[in-house]
Image (tube, rainbow, N blue to C red; front, top):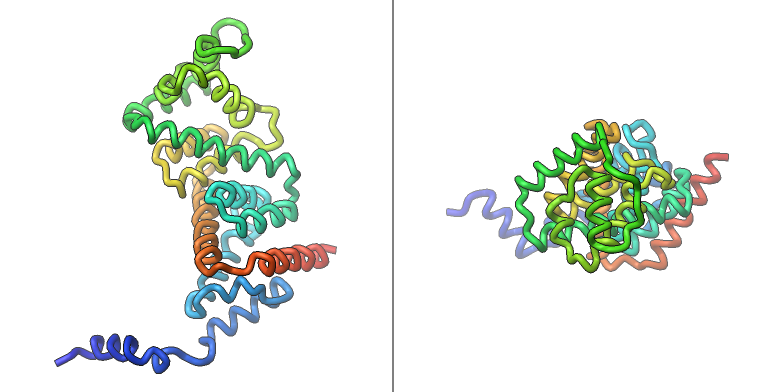
Length: 290
């Protein structure tokens, strides 16, 4: 004799129309009303989510990404979203976070650096994973680097990085050691790879502060996923003063971006309509700020 649950499952499988409500559930209706109240209209992309899920999706968006009272400011959260979107890659999310980051005060240079950090994180993730670096050894090296950076004692004067030998000297001068994943990088390319890393991630004169860059690196690493980069960027972010709340929010923004990217791409949402809706959201927010 079939159980009640088995009968219910069979009924849904054989007669799906009987198991699906013709009208949106009450929480979906209330959600669409709140979306319209908040954004000025209900964007088409909100209908890509199942109606039974849309209330939770919207609430998560409002309490994390759109919440002005979280540990991270709007600009930082949107730059994190942009960096994650850029390397998925997701055209929908890249456009959305680019436009909304500007609303939060991000400059063109801020956005370029966020994308550059995404690229660098993927670059070194490929190296560490592809060369199968021992993780316990990696963590020990990161700890030594962290200790050195708190009390650096560079030897010798700075010198141009032109080849492998000069790159190794400058890496040791900067980090206190040449980590294994850099030592294993082809000698022919380590000078360029190091200059690239130093000019963006390690530079104190970039538009973005060190903490923001490391939180971006962490968010990108979290959803690759790359255990090496997660550990490195978490520890580096802490060195720059990142709190546990800021670290959690960076990871959450990575999760939200991947979630929305999966739904929008999987639904093959109309990109032209999506961009039109995003532009309308931005215009409505700007009008509300006046």
